[in-house]
Image 1: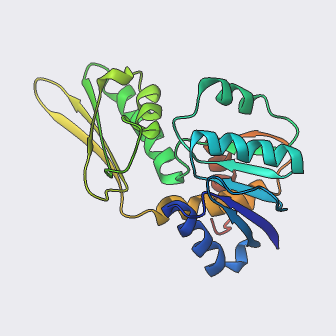
Image 2 (image 1 turned 90 degrees about the horizontal axis):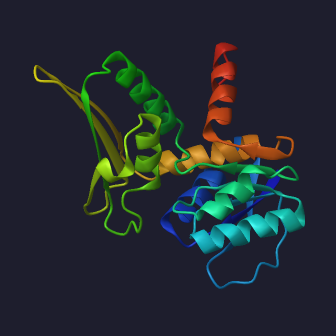
Length: 228
């Protein structure tokens, strides 16, 4: 069993990840320890999963480098210099995505295709998240907007209750309107993906990985008839 450190274990995502790891021993992972902000980092593990803060993500990355462990970062709103630092990593297996959900990634691919099919239509992207979310628009919304060449200042957003994450693309012409929508029903969508990616990442050679790398692996395995 590979030993997992969860950075941000007291957060809602950290708790969901710990629970899913415990419930699914077939993934070959076990929680070796957790850390919340301000705690010491005196622990060992094969991989660290970070859903904390930009500062916490940098600390998780530094710990992984020091311990030669794999590192999965799902924290959003990271500074540009840290993003560049991660993209150049070649000493440890490192995964970063502003949204770790495979279905959200495939939704983005669908949006790209739809915009190619309807090039003359006006585009509008709207996102809804819970009231505790600090960044607005979200990292996911910014990434989706980037995929369809929509300026970030054209994203509209709402913060409502406990909404895990909803993203809506509208394509409009004078004659019709097309709406594509992805709605996360609960945080387990993201926690489940994070754990599956961690089980995959810990077996990868050193280098920088994104959700597209994981999607290629999943699609290749699905063609062979293997479970995702």
